[in-house]
Length: 134
Image (tube, rainbow, N blue to C red; front, side):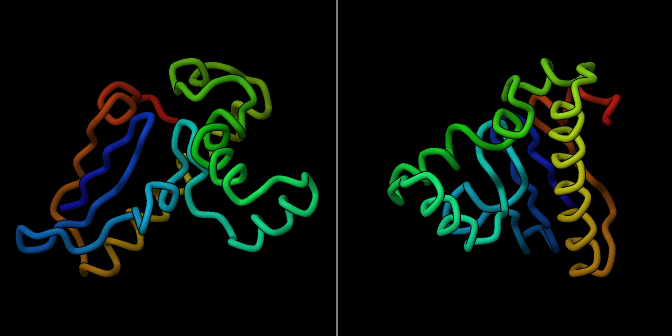
């Protein structure tokens, strides 16, 4: 089974033989799929680059990655998928495409790791209500 909790905060979990087998989250909720305001997986060298470019401290960068990135940072409009769903602005479209790309990437890798899946479960606001993705 693969459980996709897709909302403002999002994660995907692979369940094998009734136990969690793998998850999209790591040490913190910053890793994994792109979320409402969280970046999701990024190249760690990006932090150094942005810190040199902006003069931000590591604490300020982590705050940006947690509160000003994800759908909000990519779209420049909103962290709420309902605001982006029918918006044709290029950055809004890009935010949805990246969100979907990361979901597909994790689902695909989990299916490969487990040798298949019997079911994919969608939960939370986006998972339950956004049937018309992309």
